[in-house]
Image 1: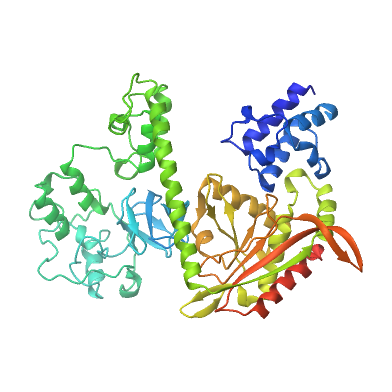
Image 2: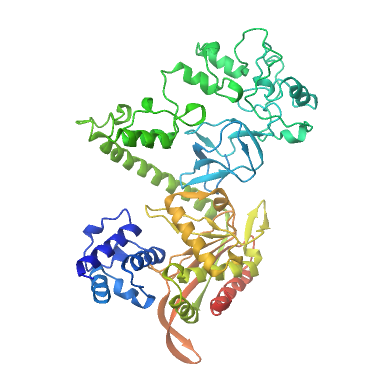
Length: 80
Length: 501
């Protein structure tokens, strides 16, 4: 998966759990859980959506990789 | 208008899900009510036939106002809104009416004798209970429609109306004979008269009106499929998709924003309306919370207890379990915290219930109120029913569903009224400790802070453990600190044995 594809999947999943937020304006290195005020349930929905879309099962141990869009992109691009 | 929580003073009927003549079962949803905090499906408290709808969609009425009449469909509709009934529902009345007018309530029969205004009976009670006074009629007549053929109206009189409606018609110089009644059996209702005076404003549900404004659809062009041809939201959507492009913007509401082009207008209208509406809702939500919380702090002598629970066993167990499960069935620590609270509440029933009339009334089961923060601000605490008996999987699924529906503003009546104890879980955002305010008439509120790694002494050694601060705010009228401490000890014990949750 190219970084571009990974970025699209992540921003798509984020806009699903935070439909009112302007995901495009999100800085790549911002802690998006914090910025978008995602609670654990929102984050779980995000992981679920992203796992489905990417075909890669994101485990709980991988959660720290999804602190920012940039780190998430890197993680997915490397593995998928 | 049922009370859907301690913070509710009035409610708005958004939409009727039933119409006069509909047979409904107990517990069936009959209307959507906006409480300022959410739109709630209100259920019928008894089975029967809707005799009349007393509060029109779009109206805001105080808690306690009768919304509709439910009868058994066999006898005269008792009158609440429109004045005295012609006769008390005596034993003879239904008998007689069953003979003469097998299908129609007495008052709707086109008879020249209007229900005597001279001998008014006191208005019927708020909740009509026709079953109790009506002897069973052998053959249940099919409600409405079949107008009796034999006793033809001797005089071509307008359909009988209640004195109140006639009075209103006189006042407004409305000719009743020229009106088409929309009540059951063609009866002319108060709103028929009210509408008659006005230039024909199409009948439409408030949601349909709002949609029509937002989509730029002229209601006059929309065929209604609802009760008595009223336009429903779906009709508007259909009309909007048919025209393909937004039609004229309705000028009455967009006056404040002069339109430059008809095409751009609806969008601006929608946005222009959305903001004040959101602000109004926000205000109403704060006021609702203010009422409940002020009442709580005014009336409830709170006492507070706290303890720290080592979550390492629970989290390790959860991690193992989640590793083997599909992502969709993953459990959150919140599910464990809720389940432990529910089981502890069952173990210490003195904290599970209500303080009503200077006495404690225990809850029949543990219906766990779950405080859900809403994205636009504000808070709602709907009940997770029977939480102590739910398997963790089901509890997790229930939690997801409840949170999603809370945020979408679509909850059920029972969820709003039946919580027996509430849990607030500030979760992963933020702070370690929360001291809650009890939601009356409940008697306890459990609070969980964030799970954080902190130093912790285990077996004489200092280690770093994931810890959670559990608090209990309890009503000192109902229990004492000893009871509260038993509850927190139970939560601690349960969280240390996650496999038993």
